[in-house]
Amino acid sequence: MKLVIISNRLPVSLSEGEGGLQFSQSPGGLASGLRTYLNSPSCKVGSGYVWVGWPGRSVAPELEAEVTRRCREEFSALPVFLSPEDTEAFYEGFCNSTLWPLFHYFSTLVSYREEHWAAYERVNRVFCEAALQAIEPGDLVWIHDYHFLLLPALLKQKLPDLRVGFFLHIPFPSYEIFRLLPSSWRSAVLDGMLGADLIGFHTHDYTLHFLTSVRRILGHEHEMGQVILADRVAEVDTFPMGIEFDTFSGRATEETMVRARDDFRKSLGNCRAVLSIDRLDYSKGIANRLLAYKVFLEDNPSWHARVVLIMVVVPSRTGVEDYQRMKSQIDELVGNINGKFGTPAWTPVIYQYRSFPQEQLLPMYAASDVMLVTPLRDGMNLVAKEYVASRADATGVLILSEMTGATSELGEALTVNPNDIPGMARAIAVALEMPADAQKQSMQAMRERCRRYDVVRWAGDFLDSL
Ligand code: GDG
Image 1 (cartoon, rainbow, N blue to C red):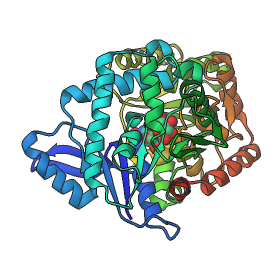
Image 2: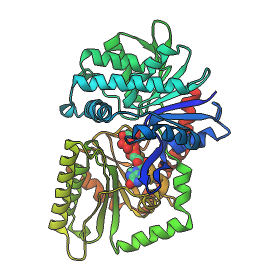
Image 3: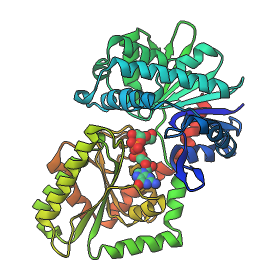
Image 4: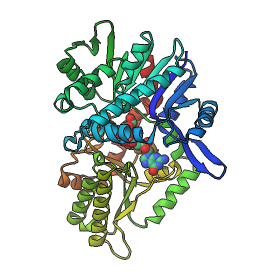
């Protein structure tokens, strides 16, 4: 028995180098968590796996065979090639202009275009055909995320005995939001997901929202999360995703990391560090965070020249107009704050619009006194958990939006509403002034929880249930 994992992006990056295409394993996250689980003694699904997904860029037709061979031999991966038109209408279209804003409660940003829906159906079928090439009798299939809501049922139709799991990484919205989808789409989406034997969400609320939509739109009742269908039962349950806790926590105490953390601290002079890291996305609430920091500086002149906000914004979906507009708004706000409060010796916001290798993120987590995680909506938010794991001495304060999935597990954080700008400004002041004992008490409890339910345990629980 092997595990067939299906996700939009393969955990393999392709880039063009001098000697032609270069292949590298994408670090961290789901891929390395799953590998750790598959190699662990607790693994019950056999150790073999194949990963089916898009390689992240268009590949010239004459190179497809070579890319397929190298992905199979070096990464146990099966690449699915998409035309630029399908990438546009499926990925940027239905996935990121319909499902993403809708499921994150940005209903006014949702586009409803028939041709995007058609591409979504088409690409789900393309992935079904590709996965069928990799699947053998007795295999387990684990499908990930909102790109493939139709795929579980497509696979089940072809192979009724196949064991299929599906996990949604983003929120499942309340029925009142979900039903904004045209009726034939919303029924197809729910039927598609119910093709899985096990459907997993990050939080109990998302699980309940899904079950409510299933009952009200399709008329299927459930008993304790088991949806009774005509010929089978689909199980719906909650699996809050964790991180590689031991890796983050262990690395934080390595000599090179400690040195990098101390160097980073030294570079900030006498200033305390408040950190924020996210992909550029309207769901992450970056502008509100800056506004809150501005109010904090206005209300707390005693902190001037004693604090910096280190704001890492990772470029994302750069081709989409909404994202370009958001980037300009952030640039402007940063300029505004630095222009208003900064001095030749002090820059209140250190803004980095780029991604960093993990070796550089870790010292930032370890050096920062406060972590500001304030999304307007977020399925889970792993950055919050990574900060907790990186605080090996249990100091540091996490300010966490109550609109994240992570808030249900990290109750000891300073919880904020990301729409309450003065409330967030006050939380920054409270965090910076929190005594070490109080910091440690909260951080210790959060560390214990993140340690116990790490990504290996998460993958193990899901696959065991499946
Ligand atoms: C989706 C859901 C859910 C960030 N910057 C850099 C970098 N990162 C890494 C972080 C973290 C990951 O990216 C971001 O994960 P998040 O969970 O915070 O957010 P999304 O990308 O939106 O993820 C989310 C998640 O899926 C899992 O289910 O939690 O709700 O939206 O691991 O460390 N990594 C590197 N350089 C960077 O500059 N190397």
